[in-house]
Length: 198
Image 1 (cartoon, helix red, strand yellow):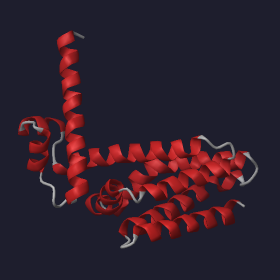
Image 2: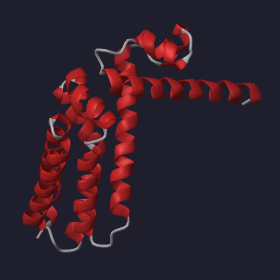
Image 3: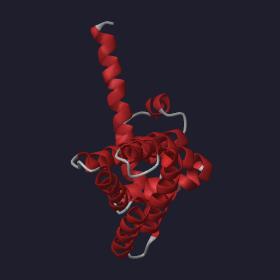
């Protein structure tokens, strides 16, 4: 590959990243419905052709933003659990990190409020499972390997916990008093993990 080709690829990647960054800010501030593709184009300082080269539609741009946020959330959840040596403590730290992230206005608006409406519940749930279910299963597998959960319950517990934690995150995101909801949600997550895993 020539230097010119490499530079074109790098420029293309930089433009794509700029479009995602601008769209993230706009979707978070204005919501999906309140954000126009023209506003993203102008905010990123690119031509309409350049925007459509990277994203065929507003929905495609929203999905790219959503994937970017899912990746960030996943990384932060894993990082929260990384410093622990006890598998249940690691699971708890990761779950509580997700509840705290539900208080982030960008995560709230894009991932928890607009995404289910824009994508539809089934697609949103499938995306959540693709991104978070594997992490949840891995954490519960460690708990099972530690002898604190039967191995044959790992899959079902992963689904149960993911659904429960997602619901707590939704309550926090939609609450008129997110601080109080987060406090209650944290207590609920602690109590749930205590009852399930001891």
